[in-house]
Length: 344
Image (cartoon, rainbow, N blue to C red):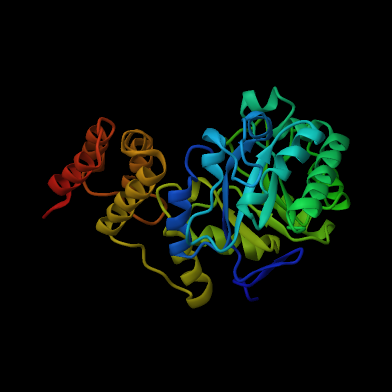
């Protein structure tokens, strides 16, 4: 079985099947750029509010969306294929927001139907759509229409969970409705909204959805090591794997997973290389947000970069580093911290 292979999403052909999921507060443009360098075949922005996009004043209709939300959506210089993810609970609002993406030229518009965060759910968006399949279908139809009218017909995809809770695991109906209304791919994170990110994801749901739908199915959930990607692809038959928490502070998950799938072995980068990647992330983020904001945002990112994960150790002295990193205010301070604590 050829586990590393191209994925065809509507008219879009992607040369490999290792994708980066949208993760709020982490998958900024700077980080996505590092993931592309490491071999991510498709990247996705953080979820963006359709209402915020539509309500933000815009002077030039041909200009990219403005404000903080617009800043989340810009393409990195090396992102050849990227998706913009929207969330919202009203078809007309989602339609209007999708139209505003035209200046960004996304390759995919993804609809978030799985976010469990209360403020998203209370707005009738994210995982709340799992409770109203007809509304989800209308939203997919609306975004597909916007894509046809102003986005050159780029594929519309949908990211879902297995259900609202254990008693309403309706991913099969949701997946079918999404496909029938024009979705070109469905990504399934097989946890319910009630589970949040706890417990264990049920990969058998991914295999089940693969057997049901004609469009590609991507799998997500509990992907923290290259072996996890290999096992999900082998066990479920999904078209692609989508790394989320497993990629945070670890863009190398893409290079080592590709090495395992193609060569049968891999080696994690040394701690020094992970630190250098984090510092490059910081510099890129400062270009977008300014140094002060970027340095504060990177505190949590560097905590992720310095911790270990399945199969690889953390940065030596990581706990001591993290105690200092959470107070860093400038790029120079970050560099000084690492120079002191990582030199032989």
